[in-house]
Length: 427
Image 1 (cartoon, rainbow, N blue to C red):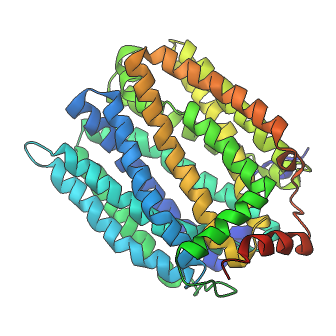
Image 2: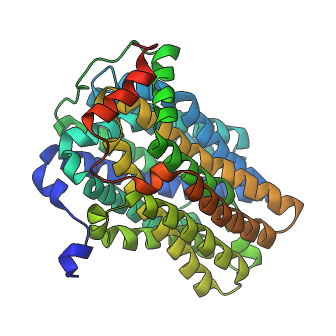
């Protein structure tokens, strides 16, 4: 196999000016958010000395997204998607600035960190479905896997450099700089969107409301591929997400401080970046759904290895392997989502997908912190990884539609048949 067949496909960046601007603005925002998230996790742990409190911070972000993401999906199917993306950048920048102000107080308020994080999650919930649903219009269905891989590189570069930079900034200039960079990132994304053409949906959706949302939910329920994707990733994130334990593990297991915490937080991003950079083969898979299942097993097994070692280099290697598996799964799930979803439902289906992707890690972090509180850090990490492996095997056996999913997707007739069955009551 030639290097060109392995390396990430950059055709979407070459072919679409609008996608280049969207990609650049999104990358800057994700990097700032990664820095701020790591800073907030460290600040909450420093204030409380509780891994459960860190997990609850992640839960606050997930709750904010969950509150707003369904509305964001319905809006993305009815209104211009670029307009919705631009609308949330200024409020998000102001919220990040408030985190900086709070961190400069003599006694930073813990409740304020939770409340502002909730608000930032809500902003993400409004904008993310529009960004996901807009991608097919910018790159075409042929390059959806490549676009997802490029998005993965951008996100993982941010998550790789962000926590490591956050560790350095916390020990140096301080938390306020971390939050300030997040505010600048949101503003930069808003500026980049000025150069992206309008992105209205191809067909008008019903007015946002319960009936509109129910149409999307019914479609997912009738599609074995979409249901299987959601369940596989839910299993991995609920049982195999130990991020809230990283501050405690950095101090107790690896006898370090902010720098060690930064390395632990960044290691999955390094593995994911390597996975994305070598993802050229993913666009040629005959059974991408089967690889989604295998990637879930790789994630869980790597988390088990991470939980059993006391060597920092070995632990970082296992976290990198977990990140690579997660990235490949994410690339394939993103592509399959767009292929198996009709455009008139793409915003709502993207919102349901994003709600699962974003909120289940928060639940998993809370679960990991609670199990660690009741047992130990090692038991929490290892038991979660084992449960993840077992769940992936069971779900893979029970959902043949996911195992058989292809990039050619369903025929137009099959897709519309599923859509008609889900939308009769909502149209």
